[in-house]
Image 1: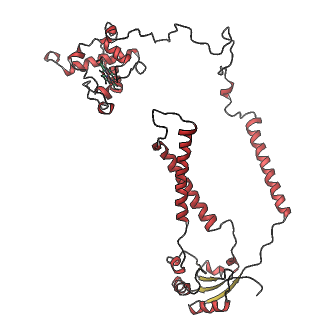
Image 2: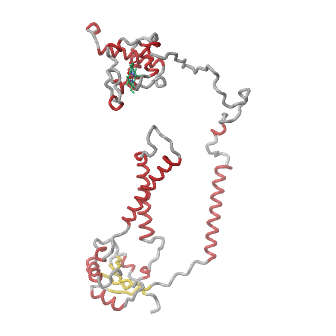
Image 3: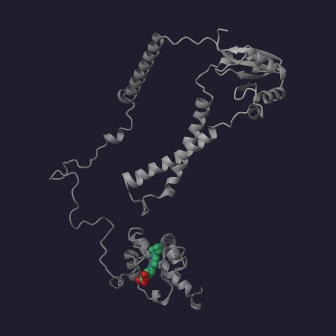
Length: 376
Ligand code: HEC
């Protein structure tokens, strides 16, 4: 026989016959059996004596590699190449790396699963298989089940293989040879295709260029570039020395931010609350107290806030006699300057808000120590 033998094929009536034959022939032709069926058949892998697919292992290895890659990449950027402390956290805050590690793991695993199955295991871009030249092929996609004994470049006597298949119940047998090798693609065709590809790239590039740069109606995001403005380190005609950014003249005060001269609560004690005790002021004071002071001093200003223990300091109980007698100005100073572990809230609250909080605080003090005469 001049043609190279690919396999000897036996057709079976139903899946059961196929499975039985596979089990019987497995020991005689180890590693050389393959099956062709119109739909997946359970138990066929074991009957053929096939190993488990290596795909799961490949995915595991690549998944671990993905996790490691993401971790190392983030470590390299955040702790080594460009270390920046964010919010006082350590440079290698692995908890913050987890989302990206998770995503890269999924990315690596998914690509491995897909490419591994399609390219490596199913050899997909190759759309050709010697079996496709078999005459049984049309039946095998409908209602026949075939078992093949492959030659695999070893000695395989077709007639004895055919006999073995018949003995195990094959209805028909067929000897499948490798079809003649396809002609290699001609050089001209390759050159024409490459030229067409290159030309398409050039056209795509020109089209993109014309759309973005030349087509006048579509300047991408250029309006911000065209506004009158002063770029950093550029000169300007505004000042005599043509400096773009002049230093702030000495003694400059920003609008609404008069300098605060006091250094101690005692010095500030003389300040008087300029706000009237109206419902609106109390409402504002309550809203600000609840957003700013409450976490530490508690909703009733009795020092039982949520942050107390975690914070490692016990905030003052502001309802005691001592703080009832504490002047408004001194509370104002505490808000402005803070005290020990209590930070300054000069930037958080406006002047009016500070005074409103103080009115509200006075209300809380009185509510915590109410007398009969306070009742309406
Ligand atoms: C982050 C927690 C925290 C917040 C928020 C906070 N405080 Fe305090 N506050 C403290 C602690 C702690 C003390 C006790 C400080 C000390 O005596 O060492 C204190 C003390 C005080 C005192 C007494 C100061 C003194 O001289 O004895 C006043 C008054 C006060 N706070 C008012 C306020 C007001 C008003 C707010 C809201 C604008 C506020 N605090 C927000 C933690 C806080």
